[in-house]
Image 1 (cartoon, one colour):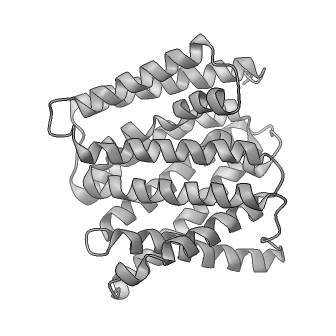
Image 2: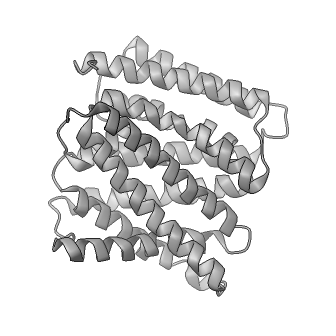
Image 3: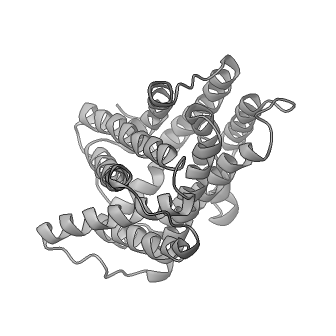
Length: 301
């Protein structure tokens, strides 16, 4: 997620690290609320309808914002990459919402935290970046942590647990394409393409996946799109204010938000093995972030 957002914005590093880190914590908190709202809605509405609502209302809010800024967001220098990136994001969103429908929030995020590690491995295989021992160690540690969460032989180990793994893979692909996109387009262009393609692609499923929403459902769907946009803007601003090496690790505070939201709204509390597994995955991810920062000469505070 971190590398992708950084590449998409093209923002230069700032000199307000505390503000950047705080905004990243706020960002993952907002995105967790969005995901939790989707989990709540998926109890009454078809999953594809919930995914469509996430994009449609996000697009509506974004168009209102861009109209105020008087920016044209549809012109891109790389339409093929933007389309591929947007479709990968749709796959990641669908599998994330499916995971949340089937599993508690903390378990879902604990497995989905594999994504940054998968990006490092895929970058080596696809972009020919160097796969050194530190990256392989992070990958092995991450998969070990996921096995601890899933616990082969337990009730969690089954088809449902494959959904967050698929989410991590699709989100890793999304980040990889974002890195390939680089700074060719501004953040508003990339955000527009993601929302517009997501709305169109998921809208194709609506004839077979539609339940007329009541007022409460409609308001929650609108809130989901608006909160998602606020989370994106907070992430863009976070990377503009502080180096990626400082901001990125705070993505893992999402597990705290997930535990709080999952308990307060759904009455779910993760068990000890889930927390242990999440800690292992997070440790592997932090090891990777530290290694990448040193490799890129960004390990300053």
